[in-house]
Length: 362
Length: 248
Image 1 (tube, each protein chain N blue to C red):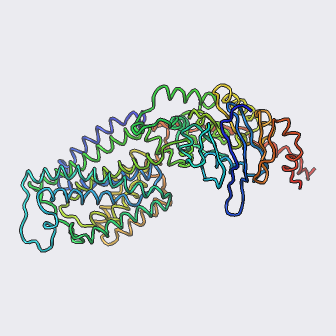
Image 2 (cartoon, rainbow over the protein chains, first blue to last red; image 1 turned 30 degrees about the vertical axis):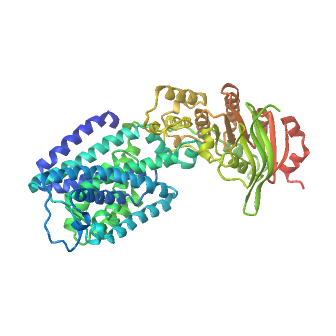
Image 3 (cartoon, each protein chain N blue to C red; image 1 turned 60 degrees about the horizontal axis):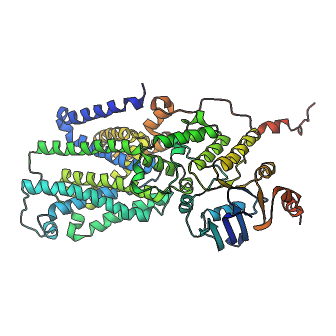
């Protein structure tokens, strides 16, 4: 029995665990919700970074963009956004049940679509860059977005926006957001499993292995690259909208566009789990989240040292990641076949041996 | 000369002060095998790169089936049916041989939704047939990167055939290949030409191979077209022998 035939079973198990987890550990449901967010981060980063070989450091842009788009839609449907976010506002604004959920659903949709559209525009620009330039270019987009939002009064500038308050019990609220993030992560995983089995999967892998060759074969490389970014942005946008509402308050630098935390975690989780694999990002996200939470709790003040150490260990000793390592070690269980250790066919070297020009010793 | 599928007129390409190709005019006849020879650094690969749109040319005209292509990009030229292989073999190393083949289908008519299409049975069948043609059928599930260099060359050839090109430009197909495999490769190139009807334009240093295959051979030296003719004429041409041996 190998991993390929086990896959449907693993999906069902994951669904079961995902639904049961917050009921078994209600105290940890917020932590678990963030865990699924991490899984979404890792899976969306891997579309470009792992499968397509384009290391983006700006994916967080679409997360923040979705968060802000949703906030503006949720508020703007019923009130004037500038008035709502103004520092001098004294009136207390309450959203009714109907207003909250209408705004929330439309906000999620707008966040996904809006982020995808932004990805189209940004993809048009950043895919002129390759290698490290692409990483720096995309990072620039994310940092610039944080600074722009921090100076835009209409959306609250650096002091951010308090989102409409969830109309329900805190316990129900936790469960609600947990289930949303879990559902998004699960749908994304199933979607990617399908996607990677289509031409799209082959094409982005081809771009990863040798983009110039892919171009020489007539592949529509730009179209594939942009579509990959749009897909990642769509899911990240929705995730941003959900997370913003879960936290209840958004601001540009630390929550919407956290370029030094979530943005780096995405890369780390994928590297840890194994890039370019379907399950690697999931495994990486779980391991990373657990390590991070433990160190954050018990080594307060040392967390970034622990994080730095983790980066060094992964990059130096463990580049293929957990799943990558397992696939290398037990390839046949993953349905990969490698060349049996056969004798190399005789090469030109033979002739050099026969050349009688070094018969010094008799 | 029968009708030309590729026609170059006065193609010049320089890199800084170095003129890699100067005023080259030649034509590649349809459905034949044409050779391109010349000493190292004579501008053969540069000429190939110019033809497939890898870099813009400084002046001159390149026509493919009567259509001016000197301003088109690599992908567009590949899609209208002119494909090239690389001197340093390039395959998609982390993918299996079969996957390498499946992504090499012609992208001429690929629409937006074709991105999300799954492989079709007939495509996989054709891929396996072509892998068998180059003798890699048994290795179809292996990672392409784990093949030997010669096998990778054969895979690259199979990928090119999978793409159903009208013209195939091959940059030193026999370089680095085990001498005992060269005959098999020559035979397969011939069959690609005769059975699949693909026009071949081949850069080659292996004189025995190219003299055997080609009906027309062009020779470059110092970026200029030195001679053209059938293998017999080329073999007797003193200028070419001088160019190779460095006579002044």
